[in-house]
Image 1 (cartoon, chains in turn green, cyan):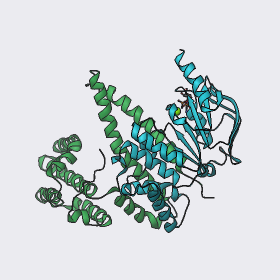
Image 2 (cartoon, rainbow over the protein chains, first blue to last red; image 1 turned 135 degrees about the vertical axis):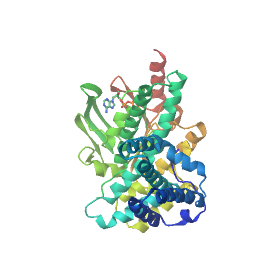
Image 3 (spheres, rainbow over the protein chains, first blue to last red; image 1 turned 90 degrees about the vertical axis):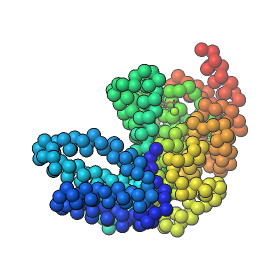
Image 4 (cartoon, protein in one colour; image 1 turned 90 degrees about the horizontal axis):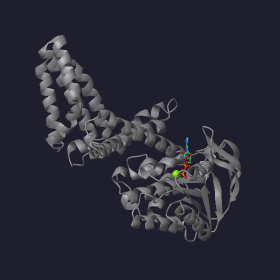
Length: 198
Length: 226
Ligand SMILES: Nc1ncnc2c1ncn2[C@@H]1O[C@H](COP(=O)(O)OP(=O)(O)O)[C@@H](O)[C@H]1O
Ligand SMILES: [Mg+2]
C-alpha cells in the first residue's frame, strides 16, 4: 500500500526533510546543465548508489522505475527518431535520474515531515494562500495513492473471478466510480470536521 | 436540542423524507430502517451536510443550513467507513485536523490531543500511519478526531458495519460511556439495548418512533414478512 516511506536507519533518513527538498530542487535544476551522456550516466549511477547508502534494497529502484517504464520508452524512441541515439540515451537517463532522486526523497522521508516542510515553506505566504488547505490537499493526495492502488487491485481480482481479466474498460469503470464515490465521501467528512471559529 | 420543523427532502423530485416534525432531546437515540430508507439523509440534516428541500432543522436554535459551520462545532459525525473520515497520514495529525479550525494556541491544542489519547488509552497509536491501522483502530481514531472537538452531540452513521465482533464491542463500550447526546444509525439492533428512543424510517416517512423493544419488534415483523 501507500506510504512510500521505507523505515531504515541511514544518514539520508536522518537528514532533515527540508534539506532533502532543497537538494532535490537543486540537483533537479542542475541536471539540465549536464553537458554529455557520460556524466549523465554517472549521475544516474550515483542516484542508484544513494539508494544503497540509504539501505533501501535495489529491488526498490526497480519498483520505482517500473510504472515509468513505458513513458521512458516512449521518450527514448521519440528522441531517437528526432535527435538520434545518443541524445535519446541522454534524455532518458536524465528522466531516470530525476525519478530516482524524487523517489529517494519520498522513500526516506515520513509523510508528516514532508507536510511539515510544505507548511513551513508556505508560511511566509500565509496572507495570500491558506496553508491549512494546501497541506490538507497534499495529505489527501498522499491518502489517495494507496486508495487507488487497493481499489484497482480489488476490482481486478473481482473481475478475474468473473473471467473479465483482459478488459481495460471493465477495470476502469468500477475503479473510477469507486474513486469518485470515495472522493465525495471524503469531501463530506472533511466538511463535517471543519468548524467555524466563533 | 435538535428540532425538525416540517422537513421535506427530495432528490430530483423523488421524495425521501416527507413532512417531518419532531424534537430530539433524549441522550441515546437509535435510527433504523432498510437500506435507502433515508437514515443517512436524516442524520446529515442534523449537521447541515444535507439541506432540507423545505422546512428547517435547528440545533440549539441554530439553523443547520444557515449556520452550518457553527452547528458542526456542536455536532460531531462518525461515518461508516473510517478510511473516508481520516484525512491525515499520521494519527496525531489527523486528530489535530479539526482543531486547526478553532485557532487555539498550540499548547492548548497539544494538551487536548494528549488528553484524548490518555483518556482512551490510545497513546500507542499516536505516531502510527493511519492507513496501517486495523479497522477497529481506525474507527476509534475517527471517533477520537470527533471527541477532541468536544461536541455536544455525536451522530454515528452505521459505525460498526465494518467491524468484527470484538471491535464492535469495544467501540460501543466507548460510545456508551460518552456524556454527549448520541444518535446512532445501525443495523445491529442489539446495540440499541438501553437506548432511550428509536426512530424507524420506512417508505419515505418516520414509520415508528418509540422505545427500542417496540420499534425493533415492528421492524422485525415488517422485514421478515416480505
Ligand atoms: N445526493 C443524493 N442524490 C440523489 N439521491 C440520493 C442522494 N442521497 C440519497 N439519495 C437517495 O435517497 C434515499 C435515501 O438514502 P439514504 O438516506 O442514504 O438511505 P439509508 O442511509 O437509509 O440507506 C435513497 O434512495 C438514495 O438513493
Ligand atoms: Mg446510510
